Length: 245
Image (cartoon, rainbow, N blue to C red; front, side, top):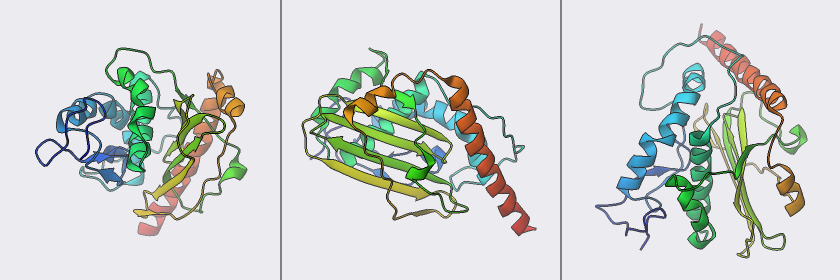
C-alpha cells in the first residue's frame, strides 16, 4: 500500500490521483497513481504546476505538442527567456521527487524537502545547468524531455538532472547525505514523436562537481544557452511546417 508523500494519507481507489512525472501541460506522458493523493495533486497543480504550464505554453504551441487543448499559433519568437521563479523550481523539484519514488526510491531520503512545497521554507536546491554538449547528441529533429537520476552513496549525493524541450535544463539536489543504494536511471521522451527514446545520458558528477553548480550566478550565460537551444527548436518547427505545405 502506498502513501501520499506530501500528507502521508493512504492511497486507494478513492484518494489516489494520476500524477504526471513531468507535467501533462508540457506534453509529459510518464505517470503514476502511487505518488500523491487527489487533494495534494490538485493543490500543487493549481499552484506551481500551473505556473510551469503558463511559462512553457509558447513552446507547447510552437511545436503543436499533443495534449488536451487546442493549438494556438504564436510567432516563432527566439527571444523567449528562461522559465524562472520559485514556483518553477518547486515544479521541477516535484518532477525529480516523482521520478525518484516511481523508480523505487525510499521516501525517507526526500522528506526534508516537503516543507518547501508547503511554503514553510525556501527551496534553494534547484539551478539551471547546461552540461557540455559532448555528453549527449540530439537526433536531428529530436525535442525531448530528459530525466537523469543519480544516487551515489560513496559521494553521499542524490541528484536529478531535468531537461524540458531540450531548452530549459535544471539540476536538483535531492539529498546531500545520501546513503541508500546506487541509482542510475535515465528517461528520455521525444514529445514530437510521442515515444520514449532508449538512449543513455551519461551524467555522473562527484560531490565537489555537484556542489560547484550552486548557486548559478551567471544569468547572461544562462540566457545564451537557452536562446541557442530555443533557436534550434524553432528551426525544427519551421521544417515540420514546410513539410505540411
